[in-house]
Amino acid sequence: MANMSPKKNKMPTLSPEQRRTSFDEVATGYTEEMAIDEALRCLGCRNMPCVSACPVNIRIPEFIAKIRECDFEGAYEIISQSSSLPAVCGRVCPQETQCESKCVRGIKGEPVGIGRLERFVADWHNKNTQPVLNNIPKNGKKVAVVGSGPAGLACAGDLARLGYGVTVFEALHTAGGVLVYGIPEFRLPKSIVGREVENLRALGVEIETNVVIGKTLTVDELFENGFGAVFIASGAGLPNFMGIPGESYKGVYSANEFLTRSNLMKAYSPDSQTPIMRAERVAVVGGGNVAMDAARTALRLGAKKVYIVYRRSMEELPARREEVLHAIEEGIEFLILTNPTEILGYANESDSRDPKNGFVTGIKCVKMELGEPDERGRRRPVKIDGSEHIIPVDAVIMSIGTSPNPLIKSTTAGLDVNGHGGIIVGEDGATTREGVYAGGDAVTGAATVISAMGAGKLAAKSIHSYLKDK
View 1 (cartoon, rainbow, N blue to C red):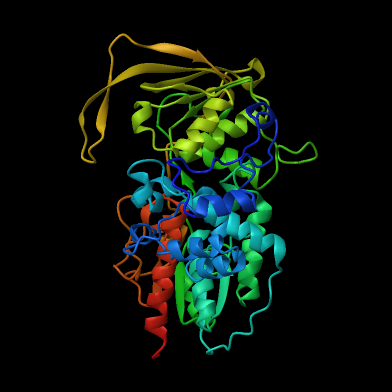
View 2 (spheres, rainbow, N blue to C red):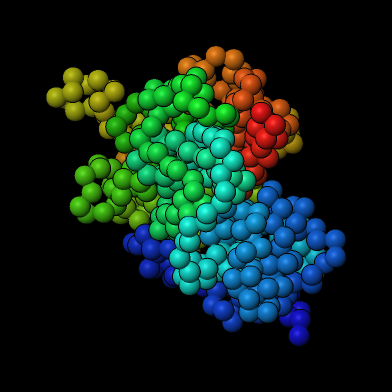
């Protein structure tokens, strides 16, 4: 019998009191009973609007139908035909602006919890099965993938299923890219990423870590080593700053560095050898998902007060509503319509009062109001005269976006980039250099996991068309 409740089954979570001092995963996942009940809310629409709104076109009504039948492994098989990282996507994808935004049930109530069901299916599969080596016949052709983030892993998985010998080159010592260095443990446990990577290894994908393309090897050398095509998915790891006075003080982090120290280097662990500032009062500048991750991480590292400083209103805040709600529940304060103009600090006498060796004491801000829309349709924030004020803090985390690292461009002839450093590609993901494709944040700048996966899948299809007749 269909479940006609206007509300989706609530996701079980740890209490805010537990979360503030723990890096344990916040959302604990649906039970089998909850998943079946939520699946019964799906109407199985004939035109399937949710599928067209998914960047990788998962056959959503079909996998949900399998959940209703208690065939959880069958549901996983359907999802995995489109997605190489279902346990990841079920946790971090913004379903509310993609598949769930088109769900018919959302017209008169809440949409079906598609992301929660995807997570349930992937977790059930990972708990009840082990990766099995797939003896897919090889076609004798090799492809190099630069970067093991979502775009690279998606491309690698699709090409491996087509019989290509795929080698993924990762600059860091652990595979996963932004999934391991950027997203905190309490939102995406690293064991989940590790299992997804092992699933790809079972397909025959080789992963070489500690290889920096552009230094250890160049793109030219990859071709010389027998690779027929190269997919660049090196992400956007170059942090942006505001260019305001005081950004060189100690205690000023990019969100990229702060999260990498905590997530990848486990700086929160008592026996970690990676230093990180455990400040008492922290200001995080920005309003995206990365800002939420940085703020909530600072709280778990012992901060007594954490602020989100954002120059627009709560309505314009780009972070997922769920992440914002969790941050508010955990006690993080949102200073909206507020923009920093200077970071304040002092220098020790032993440092000769050099500001570069000083320590943060506060952040000077002005209040803003929303004016006319900008070129993207968002109302432009305008400074309110006479509204200057100081917020006492001892650490500032800048989370205002990232750009692609210029290393690959600077070592690869014939590769064009745009004004923001993103690699220029055609509709098929091909760059201006023959045999070289690119996708994900290396092209678009920082974006979502699922959009990067979509770019990886597109590139795999294009590379297959390029190589199959060569």
